[in-house]
Length: 159
Image (cartoon, rainbow, N blue to C red; front, side, top):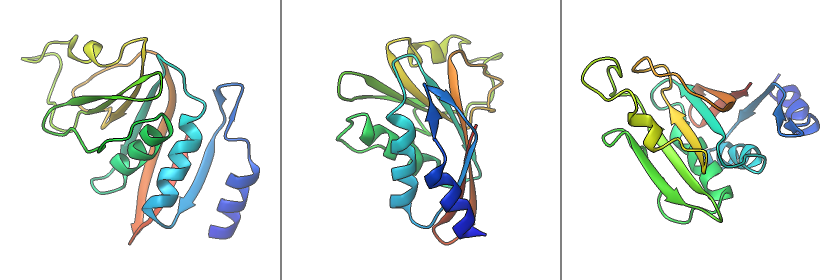
C-alpha cells in the first residue's frame, strides 16, 4: 500500500490554481515530511492560513519547519508551545507559527483577538492544535493531518 500511496501523491497535482485538492502521502523520514510541506508552501500567499493537527509527536512542527524553510525562513523553527506564537522573517513574507496546545479557551481569560496579532493578511500562518481554545480561523486554505505510524513514518493528509 505504501508504494501506491506515494505514487499517487507524486503523480497527483498537489494544488491546482492555488485551490487544494485532497492529498494523502506516507513519509518515511522527517526530511520527507519537510519536503512535502515545502510543496504546499510553494503555493501559499500572504493571508493564507494552514491548520496542522495530529497527536503529540506526530510531526506537526517538522511539517511547519519544512514549509517555513520553503518560504525563506533561515533560523530555527521550533514549537511555540509556551509562547503561543512566533513570527519569522521569510523571503518577502513573514511566517506566523502558532501552537494552541496549552491554550484552554479564548472565551475566558484570554483575549479573543489574541490570534489576530499573528494571523494577519500580510503573513502566511500555520496553526498547530487548531481545535484548542475554541478558536475559529479566517482564510484557511489547507487542513493538514499527520498520523504517526511508528518510527519516523507518518501519513500526511492535506484537505
